Amino acid sequence: MRTSIEIANLTQKKIDPDLVKKVVRKTVKLAGVNLDCLEISVVFVGEAEIRKINQKYRQKKKSTDVLSFNLDSGYNKNRKAIEGELVLCLNVIAKNARESKVNFSREFVFVLAHGVLHILGWRHGKKMYDLQDKIVSDS
Image 1 (tube, one colour):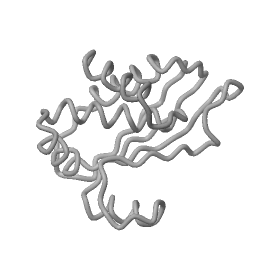
Image 2: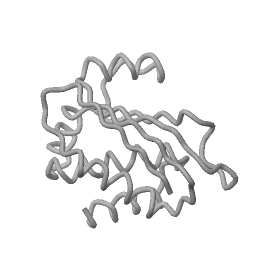
Image 3: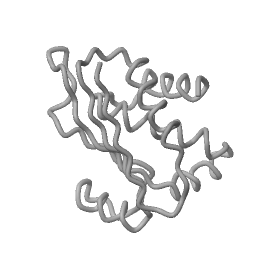
């Protein structure tokens, strides 16, 4: 499978691009998706920006940790390529980690995997959360 992962960090926070790529690839692999091509952009923004995007696309006037945009019609068995974009807010991820009493790295991987699974067409549920936990424990 050809995988293209673009990363844009629009914040002052440091991001490990190798970790981002590793988590994206691992998530796709463990999700059991059979694709010829995956093109994904991962963008890191501040709270004000993610709040604006959340308002525009989800009509929610609050910041969030991740927004997933499947730029195709979603994964199905006949589709051989997916293009998507993730928008993540590191400040919200850090707040959520503190509230959940977990370290930032764990929460970051969990949220990144969560966003990728949404791009692949997964919905919230036990199967999704169990896979996210597996990805976290393997990272």
